[in-house]
Image 1: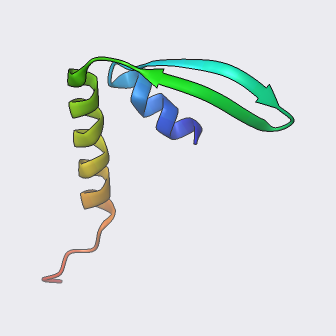
Image 2: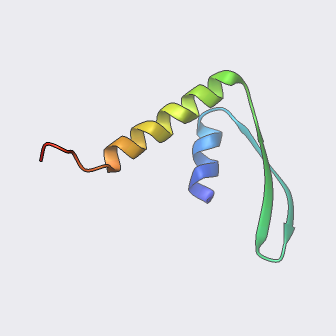
Length: 56
């Protein structure tokens, strides 16, 4: 989960720790539409890189 929050921050989102109960953390993520577009692009590209090619 920390990696996902790091990607969100790198894309321009603000990530705020709202609270912690035991080992569970509760975060808020907010930002502009451009950050969401960049986040989606990074996640898509990562998924495509991890996916085996069909023609191999």
